[in-house]
Every structure is written in structure tokens, then in C-alpha cells.
Image 1: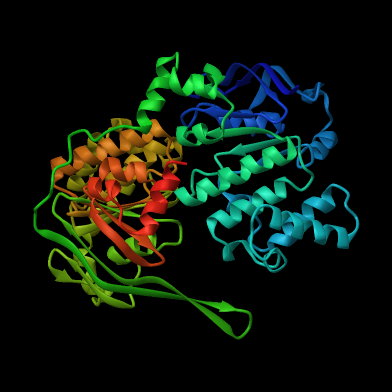
Image 2: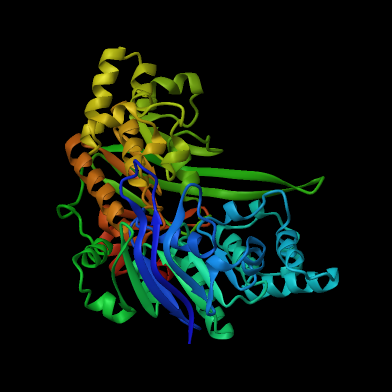
Length: 526
């Protein structure tokens, strides 16, 4: 039985956009108890569809034409008050980044309680029991205790479960999930997908799942709809679209998932340019008024990186990967152990003595938008490093323009601001900025995790070509084993702050020795 019908939907974009419509003549149907995956690159219109269904399009966007029919009722004909009653009760949404959906100042139980109160549940006792039941249902341990926790006290996977619990408060008929697993490691991702499948089976709920990850599509979809620049390219059953795609664009997306290195990786035997020995880091946080909790983020980490080599650091969220990256680049000071840059010990150096050496090791961050100054032009951003090093403004500008061309950005990018670029383009800006000081080593922290498959391949190919051209050495931090297999010469697997296994990529993936590594590989297969 049809629950949702979208007929010839058009959403116009303002003048000056890269195309006339965010969505153009989109039609789809979703039945009760069915999972429809909407797939496409960033900017294809996937999230616009979700916002249109909830009548929450940002200004000045509006539905130009078409029909949105839910339970045989045209949504455009409902009043705003009627739509507020529909949202969260009959149609709920799970967002990509749970921290954007959770109030950091409220306990998680209070936030679910707010949803219940907003929809008329008057009894405090009933609401409290419902909160505990929901937290338990989504697989969170000790729900009575956890309802009193703040979002920052939870892991990424736990926060996502809280958001799902909020969305399930009234057993909606339709759940819209907008990239809910893209920022999660492979094991947590598999857990969230298992949870969503269980919810569907238990409640007969329809699921509109927005994603750019075909591995997720294969795991959860009944049917698939492929979008390209606002237009439906193809749609059909999951086996048909995944196994025998009709359209070239779909084939490109599928090929990107299994993309191979530009050239075969060969063993690297150059000199060691980065080394960590017995590296340790402990974080301490307050519990209540008097108590403190300590977390061993790094525990006796040993690794080394050779010239021209790419070393992958893989593991779940919370395993210590990003802490290790920040210690290696000296954005964090390790509590114990040694760090060597090109044979020089730097772990104990003061910031003043370290500053002249910083050009040797640079970092590419996960979120380029957060790491780029929105008040500066791209040219100013890329020039900053050389200017600090004492390079003349003329030479700094020349180098910046050359680098922007090298990373595949147009000459006009020099005068524009970060917000005028796509996610993939901003990541290219971040790479250009890191290269501006001519480093020998790059630390890349989840630098492609938020990008769709086609843009991922472009950035990985860019890093490969730059590595060969500039003889770069790269520490590549990721939770995506497919990406690690594609780019890295060697892999180090982290678990609870320790490197539990490391070795040549092909050998490690073919014959993993540690149980945790085998667990990661099994989760990757979903």
C-alpha cells in the first residue's frame, strides 16, 4: 500500500546558481514497510527532497510545482500548525550529524521528553517511562542512567541512537534518514543499519534513506533512486540497480566504490621521515563536583613512516586515531614517548623552538570548512603559511596561484571565499594550504569521510599524484577500510589507544592476525 507519493516535484533555485532547479520533475512512490534509498553526489538534491517533504525548505527556495501526497493527503494543503503536528509524530527525521540535532546544554532524556510534551503527553511519569523504553529499544546500555547524560558524554554511535530514539517517540509511519551513517566507523555503521532494519521489521515503518554510500544501499535498500543534479537518472529494485545499472552515471558511482590506485603500489624503502616511540596521552575530565575520570587515549604507540610512503591509521571512533594525528603534528603534546621529524626529536620542544620546523609536517583536516577562515579569500588562506615563514608577498601569491592550479581549482578561486565552493573543492583548498609551506609529511585526518564516492576518488587521485610529484609522505587516518586499501602502502590498526596490528596493506587484509582487525574487516563487508 502506497504511503508516500511524490509527483513531478520541481524546486527552483535562485538566479546565479549552477542550475535552474534543485529538483526537476522528480517522481517516486514509497510503500509501507519499504526502504527506498536515494543516492547521488553532494548537490544532487537528496537533502532537498527530505526538506520538501517536511515543508522546511530554506529561503528563498520553494516548491515550484508538483505534488507531495502522504496517506492520500496533499501536504501543501495542510496548515503550518497541522504540519507541526505531523513532524515528529507521523513523519520523523534522523540527521547526518547528531550533535547538530541535540542541544548540548540539555540531558538526552530531557530532549526526548521535550518531543513527547510538544505532542501532548501530559503525564511526567508516562514521559519518563517512555524515554527509558526508547533508549533501551535502540540498544543503549543502562537507559535509566543514560537519560541523565549530556550529548558530549556519549560516543558518535550512541548520539546517533539517541537521535533515532527521539525520532521513534510516536512510532512514525515514515522515517527519513539523511546520511545517518556517513560520519561513523564501520562497526558502528553496521550496528546502526542493523538497528534500522530491526525497527522496520518491528514497526512496519517506511524508510526513506538518503546516502552516497553504495555499501549502505546494498545492506538496507529494497528499492533505489539515483539522482544527478536534481534529475532522476534511474530507479528500480536494489538488485537490479546494483547488479545491472542501465545508466552510465550509476555505473560511475558504483565504479567509484571499488576504484583502484592510479598506479600499482610498490614497497617503499626510503629513509624514515616520521617516527613515534612509546607515545602516550591521557585525558582527564571532571565528574560532578569532586570526581575526575581519566581516559588513556594513546598507550605506547610505536610507528614509523618512510619517504614517499602512505601509512594508514584505521580503527573505530574513539580508538585514538585523531589524537595520534594531532600528537604527531604537535597540535597536542604527548604525555610520554618520542616523536621524530626527519631525525629530530620534537616531542619535548617548546612552541618557540618548534615553530621554524612546522613547515616539515602539515595537517589536512576532516572538515575543511571549519578549518578555513570564512573572512579570508582563498588566496589569503593559502598565502598565510609562506608569509609567516618570511616569504615575500609577491612570491607567496605566486606560490598560492600555482598550488590552486596544481590541486585543480580555477584561477578565479584566488579571489573567492570558502563558502562559495563545494565540499570537494574546499578539501582541495585545504590541501593547497598544507602544501604551501612545502612540507615533507602530510597528516590527513579523515579528509574524505564526508565526501561522496566520486569526489572521494578525485581527492584520493589528487593525493596520489601530488605524492609522486612532490615525494610526499602521508599518514592517512580513516575509518573507511576501502579507502585505506586503495591509498595506503601499510596499515596500522588502532584499538583503545594501542596499535594492535600493522603491516603491508594487502598482506594485512588477506591474513589479519588480531581479532579486532578481523572484526573491522567483517563489519566493512556489512
